[in-house]
Length: 379
Ligand SMILES: *[C@@H]1O[C@H](CO)[C@@H](O)[C@H](O)[C@H]1NC(C)=O
Ligand SMILES: *[C@@H]1O[C@H](CO)[C@@H](O)[C@H](O)[C@H]1NC(C)=O
Image (cartoon, rainbow, N blue to C red; front, side, top):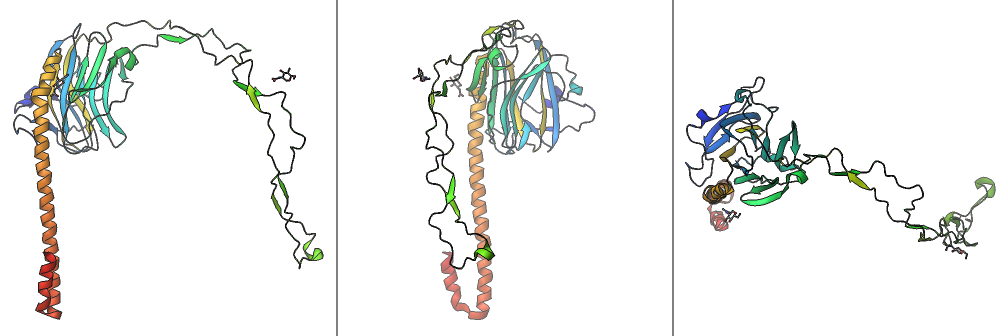
């Protein structure tokens, strides 16, 4: 969580050539608890942000790993990251930047209507691997809880607001390893493999009376009375579509007696494949950071938790996220309602002013008598 002393624990990057934005401590414009709901908020538009915090290094060997935090895009974000990155101890915090190697990147990313997803990226043997699944993120203005659970049996679970939105096997959903099976490079479709389900009937022949011209002279046309062969040339009836025209003849299709079905390329074990029973494993987890670009600032991050205990993470969901979410929603609804009323009142005032103006104009021409009618209108 973030208290007044947060800046003592977190380190801003000073990577040269970039003007990084500042985070400020804030609960935002609507919240459940003005103190407890304070997080760090991006405060400058169109900036990069790079901030990190180190902790006692640990390994997730044979343990669950949970990465969890809350994100509140209360500015109604148009384009910007809302994710965290987890690093080993080698990160030079004051030089952190977009290319700094990380272990895991996790969280929402929004840009326009096209990109609204949750990233789950693992670095594996020097490569950043994106999840092969689409996970949609929340795009409203409220606080949402993002949780990634990685288990030592190489399964994972992604939760938003304490509900699983994607889960499965690491090996299936990222390209950690080459495929287990490949098409046998030795196998080839036999030359005489017939994969045509139907063929043209060789016994079908074109009927003798088939050929008819596509267009014929209109039999109903008559030569105009004033047609002068000498002047106008020989008269010809205009052409029309021939009702007897049958189109291009094609033999009918029959089942192919030699059809063998679709040829399936046989597969063999991929010699490049070797299983890795420790896809989940990170020997040294040491730093968490925000490395973001935001067009419209105002996102509040809070409740950052890295743990090996799923129950603790769930308890946070119960004790911290849920009340914050419900409380801020009520406050926002109240604010919106008040705003609506204020707008209504302002519109009314404006209308009254206009009516008064009209009254004044009319008084000049028609005198006092009309005034009562206008009062009536307003009622
Ligand atoms: C074509 O006709 C011949 C003779 O009637 C017959 O033996 C043959 O099976 C027919 N072929 C097909 C494909 O129907
Ligand atoms: C979170 O999910 C668990 C089930 O995994 C459920 O028992 C608990 O009530 C949920 N808590 C909240 C705050 O939704």
